[in-house]
Length: 112
Image 1 (tube, rainbow, N blue to C red):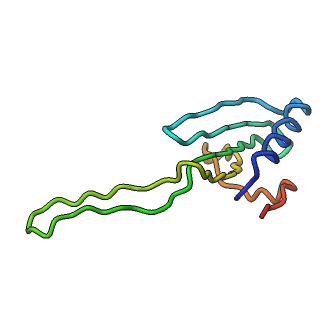
Image 2: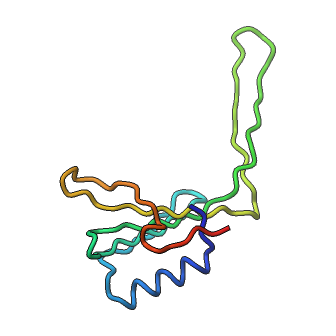
């Protein structure tokens, strides 16, 4: 689900003010940054992930027309545009794993 950075900051402050936050972490993977917050709620443990990464523009392919020639495929990313991704997961005790959850069930409306 898409979420604006400003809305994510509001949501983080709201969770911190209610003292529900169990764990916080920021993960840097190259040009991608993911903020993870785990909260304890009446529903159980819920994990929020907010990722900011460069916009994918496409791929460039280099190849030769010779038999047995190599092929080189490289992804192209924008230098100035980013994409945000918001995911919510609910901890399943019986399966001992995180399961995807619809954010609208928590009252978080989809944004355009």
